[in-house]
Length: 306
Figure 1: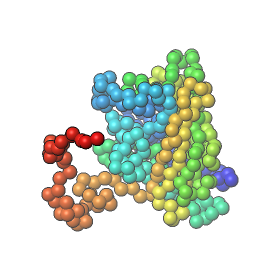
Figure 2 (figure 1 turned 90 degrees about the vertical axis):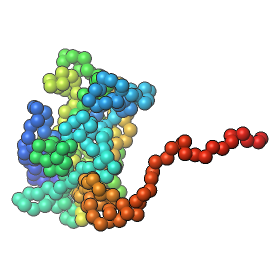
Figure 3 (figure 1 turned 60 degrees about the vertical axis):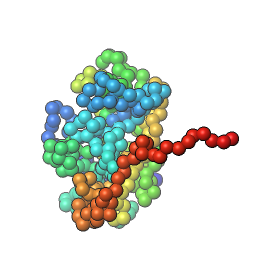
Figure 4 (figure 1 turned 180 degrees about the vertical axis):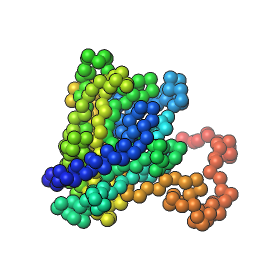
């Protein structure tokens, strides 16, 4: 079943994205929204993000041509706390969903008025956390990787030589609390894509002057039809290369929630509040140690009888 989205709803949703994008300040000429990046070589990591040319580690050299997804790396001013996934460092959901309004009213799903339209558009920086007006809007679309040492980059020669790769997304599924038509993505021309499981969407490759390379830069909003009980949802995507240059990515789950808990120092029970409950945990654990050294083990004989 196709998602029922009137042109009025689509236009309003796109306008909402545009206004939020314009409200985010431009930093050094960069795009004001955060994208999910698509690159290659998922197991390569720099030892020090401030010195990417030194001490890099590739834990699996056999996957150098495998596609992968990742969020904003640690070196970025608006880095995702749980990079490379869109989550907090402790695994909690990071991406916040907000309702879409038209003339002050929520937009109801045509065939199920108990569900209303939500999207992901909040501002964030490492320094200021959620709601920082100097942050980037999360999350709107896709971008190719231009990572340290070029190790994540898709192949690129010169402006006159289009690369062989032809990357497309495939929708693998959504969370079990959603109907199949409760998720879609909207492109900047108002077109809905990835409306049902198994749908694919090609990401146009183009020469990116600011990166001096061929790549991907596509704006597309994430949209969900949710009822009152849908507090957290997810969508599972994969990346493929129709050109045959790169291997299929692993499935990548992007999770969203209406309410997120931002880690706070001293919040021992991870409920987002530092209170008496955290103090009780501290009292209960007082004096305990998690440090264990092999030298503390009592010596024993390794000679064993057959």
